[in-house]
Image (cartoon, rainbow, N blue to C red; front, side, top):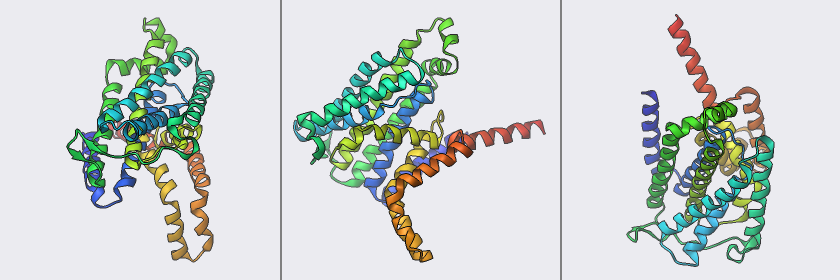
Length: 327
């Protein structure tokens, strides 16, 4: 019951948010929240640590941007092409990496993702280091004009909710239970007759497709795509989001994404506020040290909140409930 109340409150806040905050920034938060949830489906519920999710996020953005800007396709087809491209790359990467475990799996995904990065760097349609510019928003289904930020926000909100709902349904399905079994004890899952490689590949491709959906939507929102989204540092960033929020929890990656992206975009404003309130000029350089601040938060979370923020809160609630039952 409490979970449903929480979802309802989050939905109410999300609906009211564009009338209070800056819609483009809020849409960016939603895209990265979906990206982190897609990654969490793989590491949090299947136990596979991928260092290559930037390949899906960025490649889908490039394909969608090219489809809308150069090919003139409708918005819905552009996004579907981006998701399809991400799923296809995920299938190829998965077939090559899925038979390895642990650090070997992670290193293979990193190497393959870097190959995708160099393809995007050299491919003519990406415009190299200049990036893909001038991506039009167009009209959804030929009717809904997406040039208005508020209108586009609600479209992005629907996409994010649909992606999150798919992840929730997957986690609670028999397929999701098998993924959890593979994470907890893979030899046991094999002994029960499950083809674990097939299940891991399906989870990998689904995670890649959802990451691609986030990347394609982000390109539509911002109107451009750059190499930053396909670089290995983006893979590191989504790992950080997931660990800070709570790996293996449904809403933890969303909270982690909100914290990290807000710090990246608003740390300079925080520094200016601290300068005005304290008079200490050093705070004016805070925005330039965003990496250091995020790294410090990561260290604190690893040392003090090993389950992530949401994971620790959930563990504390569970412990209090047990004590109440015993009393």
